[in-house]
Amino acid sequence: MDRLQSMRVFAKVVEQGSFVAAAQVLDMSNAVVTRLVADLENHLGIRLLHRSTRRMALTEPGQAYLERVRQILDEIDEAEAAASVLSTNPAGTLHIYSQIGFGQTQLARLLPLYSKQYPDVQLDVTLSDRTADLIEEGFDVGIFSVNQKFDVSMVARQLGIAEVLLCASPAYIAEHGAPQTPEDLARHACLNFSLEHLRHHWTFQSAEGTSVIPIASKVMSNNTELLRHCLLAGMGIAMRSSYTLGDDMAAGRVVRVLPDHQINKVAVRLVYPSRRLLSAKVRSFVDFMMAQFPHPDCDPWLVS
Image (tube, rainbow, N blue to C red):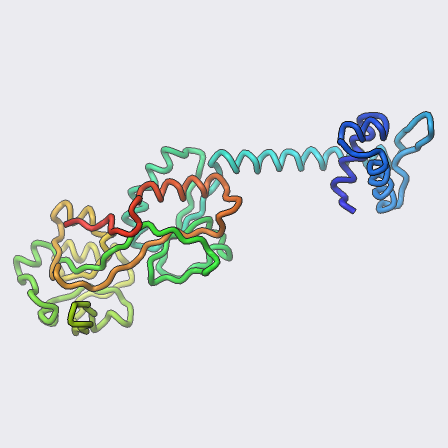
């Protein structure tokens, strides 16, 4: 038995004053309406309506039950209306997960623009380089680099391909000179992410193949912003993704070194649980981000 449907039919029978009138309004047969009310009475174990060939009236339990049923149906209608509004008008809290470097640079720049366009959406943003389970942790959408894993059942939209490059401040270059070959890095101070595979060696790609170059890490940290400040202070040469460098390179605060030697390229992806039945807030954010990065197979952050 569909209890909710039976409750709606029962309430409509009382409202219309007869089974026949309720059947007409509900576009059901009289037999179906009669059966649904009878099923409800059997389920409850009480008689809701006194019925005769001439009249119909609520029993005392039926009157009490009707009052509760009307409250329940009103609440359901309100809930459906609220959900419908949220499906068409972006509103509520949008829970965003992002890789740290992208969040500190790109999201910090873009979220004020998004918020101005969608003022009824509140933003709850978590930045981390760890692996996150969007569904398990309650995130609506995530931004991942290629090194971060996400469930293959997720929808992934590529925002761009970021180049990993080396850079230094003009002050560092003036004092120590610029390396001319990857092998020269052994004589330079390096600013490094505290990942095991980067601590002592950096890997370069060329037409001749892969080269693993030993380096000396002057500073190691898991924090992108700390390494950035060390870089700007002239403490050494840093390996950075292009999306973290745009403003600093454009302003001349850092310059690229060894530009003819490629380290790596990483895809940046916008990830969310499903294409179907997206809430308006998620759909608005996905559309907004894709509009900001219309060329997903290129590096939109690289400054020459």
